[in-house]
Image (cartoon, rainbow, N blue to C red; front, side, top):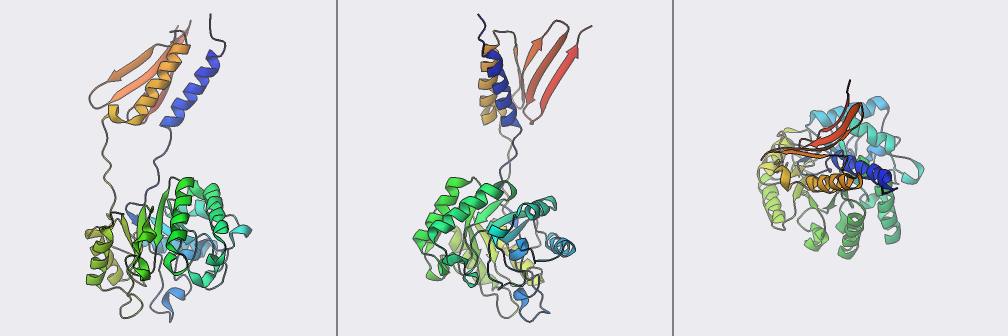
Amino acid sequence: MVNPRADEIKQKIVFLLLSCFLTTAAADLFGVRSSFLTGSLDEPQIWLGRFGTSLPYLSPTFGTDEERQAYRNLLKANGDTHIDIYAQARSTKLPGGSIYPEHQDFTAKLNELNADGLKPVLWLIPESRHGDHRQSMEAHLAFQNEMVLKHDTQIDGYVVCLECDETFTVEQVNALVANLKSRTKKKIAVHLAPGVGGYKRDTRYYKGADFIYLQIGDHLTGDYTADSAMAVAMLKEALKLGIPVVANEYSLVSTSEQARALGDLLCAEGAVGTGNGRSVSFCGQRELKKAKWYDRPEIAVAGVALATLYAVSRYDLPLQLQATEDSYQIGIRKNMKNSTAGISYRDDGAVMMSYRFNF
């Protein structure tokens, strides 16, 4: 007797099979390149001038469509792959304008960035001058959850706060990181005041974080770029903690020759990304090695799904597997009176559906 639910089970299994194979790769901050300080030496306050930083990009008053395009072009010309942006900034301390997330939807601007080749990294709590940190911990956690719910698919990672140690305790930052990690698979970073462990030199702030966004400092005077020897020493100290380090803040003008030279040096010394300019295109990217097909998780899913589909079909869907040491193709085929239909999956990610009419 045929199982009356067989057709329903088949449909669900085919859907499971396809959904497993058609997913995209997870976002990754290894190799991140951004330039969030973009001021000009011609301006008296440099980064506080118009378009001096990428952080207020989501503000409705950041600029016109043409000005935002020009700004994106500036970042890409500096070799950027990502852009650092605030999710909230309710005061008007930055010339780009305030950001009231409860009054606006970021979807369009985030899509705009992704479409132009700049992957957003969302900084959830701005520096103290904006006042957003004064909200309760319950409000901060709720805001995190809201941003993940609304925009997780549009961004590549989160920074819980800018200079966290100036406004939060170790326990509070640890709680913010833990909450985010329970809500998203995207990477989470912690940014502190200059120095490893911030101005308190307390490395417990990094507990649970996937990345350290290291502020080198020493970039507000002179040539506005940190001393190279000091920057390298600080990077090596941070790397000893066993957490990937993005050299995030070491120059006031990311497009300057000095900033790019120091960014290149920090990449060579082990940084997995830069937030302040560089000349090199390789900086911490992980080498992707193709695993043997039999070591890859999707083949197990395929086997279970197709074997189950084969079983509930009462042996009328022959299971086909062609495999070598380096590749495989697995599929099913249905022979009907005047036609043959099938679906198969290949190790390079190709899903193939076939139909043949027999004369």
